[in-house]
Length: 118
Image: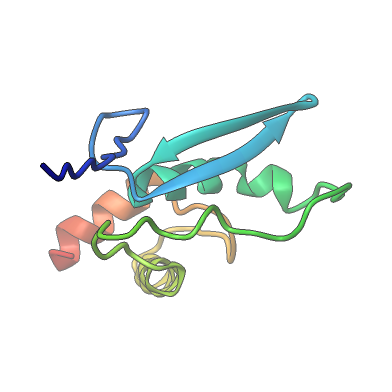
């Protein structure tokens, strides 16, 4: 009798299906976490302002591990950037102060979503 064993990765934060395994380090300790594309992006966004000004001491430049087979489509970086640019343009036209880089505030994102339905 043949057996087929499959491994299903789940997001370590919320239990949803994981799209990738993310490696990161802090204070000399390396960490590995399985995350959905959304939670991986959230982790990268949270670390962005620190990584942006930090000095690289080792390792190669990498954005997480490759997507897992059969993980389904994930929102890509270019789509997130395009959305952020659209939100920033809308925000400026509507009297909000927003920076050219970094995370768009939840207040601005909510106002954009409410006004545009996106």
